[in-house]
Image (cartoon, rainbow, N blue to C red; front, side):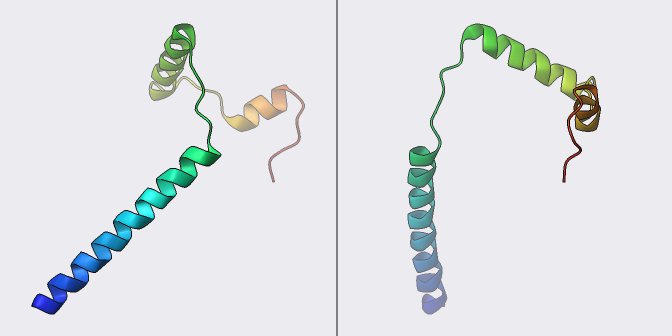
Length: 71
């Protein structure tokens, strides 16, 4: 049982190390953008609309704007 516990502990330590590395990588690759209060309000409104099903399928938007279909 001690061997199993030790192995689980080693795996957990390794996983924490991987998580820290991924978090660091994410922070270096993805820049955070400042969002204005107006943008936050608009994003919340759009989310509520989407949750109510009030949205347009991507294909409809593409057709409306004359874009080619997705691959």
